[in-house]
Length: 345
Image 1: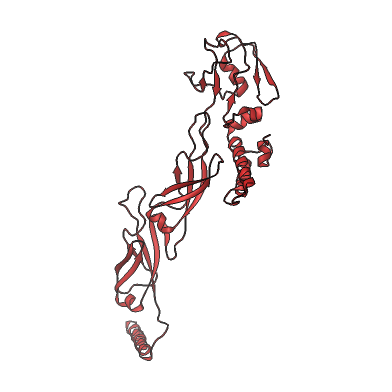
Image 2: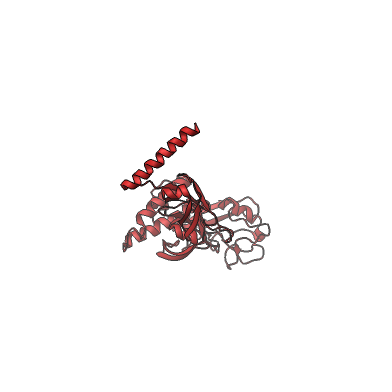
């Protein structure tokens, strides 16, 4: 006998959406196959909590479950109304005097009485309007040759609700360069139907920023009653790279240059994501000055022809060891600067 979905998640029937999600995440992490390799008991537990969450996180399915229990779903987990036994009434869908709904779980049936009205009213009273069709009256109905005798000249109808599967959310970490240039990653996740671990190839587009998501269509929870599958949304986290900082499409680095180069100017080789770039440093460059390297930043996801820039912050190297001659020259330089300062005064 299946365990009550609320008991599976360890929550009460009054639990709200946040409590349901919080309980599921805690148990899913505890029983995930990756955390319990080879443990069949944990794998079964994971399937059970996933099945319970799949129902209780969906407002309409939860409503059915709360009212009818497991009888509200077929073996595939689809919401159903068993029209093969029950709901007897007059011809043409009008003037139903009474009817019954068989629960299918061995507990007998529930009886409903109607003083008139049409078929739509009856479905609305029992299922809270969730089985009403669209304006054309075609949504969700198909003939199965039994039940509802004499309804509109048809042999009978069975109601099948159609739902889109719920989206799944997961996180993925990629390297700094992988995010900058794009890559293909192989990920392993628990299949949405709880059948085991699923391997998926994911393309990370060049230029994606931290916190953005990649959508894998149809890889979420399966749909119900012919509804389409949900999607899998992978939130991207970018691992840091030493010496590089990213802000949007721009990249920030620092570079040390010799004291003499800062004084006299000269050419300096700066590392970038695309290799070393030789750039001219102007004479008199101060420590903390930023040099802009155009087009050496991150590519735009919208236009591959557009790139951000790289900003290099200059740091001046101070000599730590000097020869006697070098020290003498620097003292001469220092005295010259002092004299220049006095004469300028």
